[in-house]
Amino acid sequence: MSGGDKIELTGDFMIPHHYQCKGNDISEQWMKFEREHSVQYESIDCTVLDDAIEEYVKKNPKSVVSTLLMAFDYSDAMTDKAKKLIASIDREAMQSGLMASIQNMQEYNNIKEVRLYTMMLCNLDGDFESVNAMSNQQTLFYWWLNNNESRRTAVREMKRILKDHQNLRVIDINMSADTVGWRVTMRNDSTQWKHYWAPGGVMDAALNNLKIRRLPTYILTDSIGRQLYRGIDLNEIEKNIK
Image (cartoon, rainbow, N blue to C red; front, top):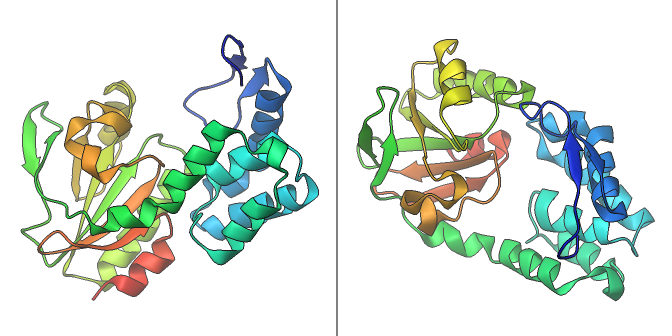
């Protein structure tokens, strides 16, 4: 999308990946891909969406949408497979701003070196609370945005994981722009773990050094805040739980 371009999005904004888009061709094609693959976007198995993106990129190497999908929707731009896919995209489709986004994603693993120390987040009582990883052997932090089927599936999986790993603690952090949808979701939530809201969303100052740019994101930490796993795959998380 170029500067000055206008797009019109319609649909229920509490249900992502189903929007109708009118504007320029690139935006329309990107949203069309999301609608046609909404099931894959909402799956907790990131490989199903990766497979769909890989197929699209192979068929559309000259499309800017291929670059967008690799920059923002592919699970891990660090893998050899991802790098080969990116290299296969036509140079004219690799706009400079998008290339910078891909480079940021390829540097994503460096952020794993950052430890989770104290974060000031808003609790359900509306008070700010100090949150950290130090009081538990292992903590699974779950950053999320919308209460969709993907989240509900993730919650069921985390409940199952907790049953098998008694020393694990789960903390979820909502990244919505306001608390309205979050509080509605929490009123109907039966989970026993702690729930917080980050007032600044992905740009919240408390989370700035963690660079949470993709939702959902999971970070598994040990008792001194080291990141043992960072990503979107609950199966991989379980492999790292002791």
